[in-house]
Length: 402
Image 1 (tube, rainbow, N blue to C red):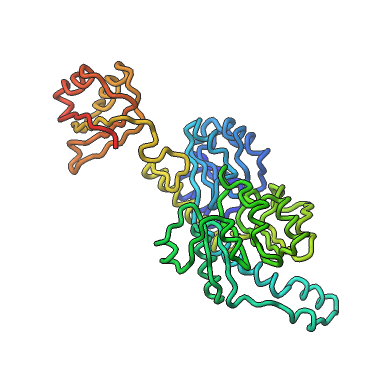
Image 2: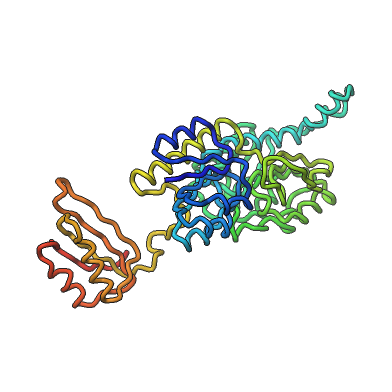
């Protein structure tokens, strides 16, 4: 079986993948446009920042699994993968600490104007009078928009600096907020209204694209600090630009609209040229610690898929109850060749579509139990046909789907 790694991956982890009996092709230089021509005979694709388009997925005739060695999956066309029955998995939570550390680094750089100080010293200029005017962080209110694993790590570090943390996410409830020592806000705007510093940690989706716009930035007080180490697309860039130019907003951004899909290149990001805006190169997750943890998880996903047929962190399977099944057929049967094939043949003859299925083997491998979730209720004659094979079937029962 062939596996393609189309992004930077350590030799140690490439060796771990080869130890699984895979033929591993390592091509970290590939970009989105290169993928379709490089997926011949590839069963498993591992990427990090490289975009996997519908064209690439359609070109990968043998493709079975795509692993994103990172937290989000917005760079992968999940609809195209689902249409072709290809598993898509990611590595959530493994880079949370690294992103949180960069978030606080940007905040401290803004408050203490570290880049300007470095530039002046390198230019032979001493300006202690100017740079001794920092506000400081103690007692400030730090707003977190998005309270997943990264948002929680950021909140913990903000609290360690003596700041009050107010947070919002769609899933955040009072009990969770209390457990993490933060105050829950009702909306992103409510966070902005209270914050001296606001930091966004939302995954990109149809619901979050452009979520932070004019209303949000208008609610921030003049001179507030805005941090984005999540996704550029969750922010309305024109609204952020106006807030910086007209209201003195200071900003630290690790993500930018129209980033190159390669590791180096020329860019023109007007926002980062403005006074009070500090930018980094989308490196929030790029520490050796985070890269090793993510690579470990990617290898674990591949191993699980090969050894057990299970895909941890799969993001494009129907949720329980979401497959459209209306009932389930529970079949206890002798563990013999062809038994389940005969059950499925009976369902097919009666035009009953199988939505989900699992088969568990009992100790001794004499008997097994198959749970078959069906789109529609089979007629009585279909059940009689299945139950009638007494040499194969121990018992078959139809129960409502939960």
